[in-house]
Length: 377
Ligand SMILES: Cc1cc2nc3c(=O)[nH]c(=O)nc-3n(C[C@H](O)[C@H](O)[C@H](O)COP(=O)(O)O)c2cc1C
Image (tube, rainbow, N blue to C red; front, side, top):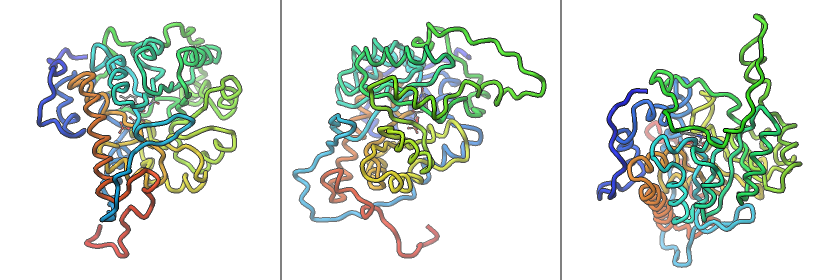
């Protein structure tokens, strides 16, 4: 990786930093170029990455006026836990890429803002150490490992450290085509590693026949399938949430297996390109699984109005991915706390101005549906 000059995290947050977009615009100055390209980029031609934002931008809100919202609030119940607001930190690998304290700084911010944090299997600080800092609800994101006994040992560690939910990521059994990161020559810098995987047994050496595929008979042979999910469910008391579902058929199947919740997500446009954005498929999935199942959504959530739109279409909460790394790079723990505060206040302002005092009041009718398309919109 190139050793280009980067600014350290700011000691004070400048007064003109007032939105998540402001953090995103400042972030490149605070990290090496290849790291930025790895974070900002998506899969292949980034069609899904762009679509995540475009679809949210096209959706509009119909506000109701003169509503008394003085008893309003953003609290909700999810999987037996009370949430102050429906905003969570998505699992994001390697926070030390952008800040020397890594996930510890993020966890401190999450604690102050009472924001649930989903800790990645690929965290750059041990999951136990993060748990010691994290006062808000803590969930663990599991990437299945080739060695199933080792996979189970990760689950046991998460249980012992007090994580209350297991979020299994199912849309990334292998990396998507990450052309942008490839072009930038991204690789993990010294001092940043997947510390939770240090004890991982070495991969068995596999020799492929010339007629065999490096994908099907190589990388995918150890990828999890529905049976593996069933097996994990049988091994833990923790509620299991599947992350990366876009099909109502998969959603129903998961529900029938007793999966507690789903994250509707295209992984921030980073795995398979040319898939729809989560917000597009959310209504059909909510309809398929009914009102009870917990549904989270992520992808390009960077405004309170984005959170509102997701709730209106049936999400229980949203997760933010890249914004946490941008804020962490620009201003450390204070930056992440500020970023979360902005998003939360924007949601409250949006709810107040739209005349929806509680999350339960935000329904389909809060979104604008023109009787006829106007001006080609
Ligand atoms: C740099 C980076 C690392 C990520 N690492 C993980 C990970 O370790 N596990 C996972 O399930 N998702 C991972 N994701 C996906 C996020 O959890 C989330 O789905 C996505 O970032 C949401 O989109 P957004 O970045 O537009 O908010 C990662 C995303 C980014 C940008």
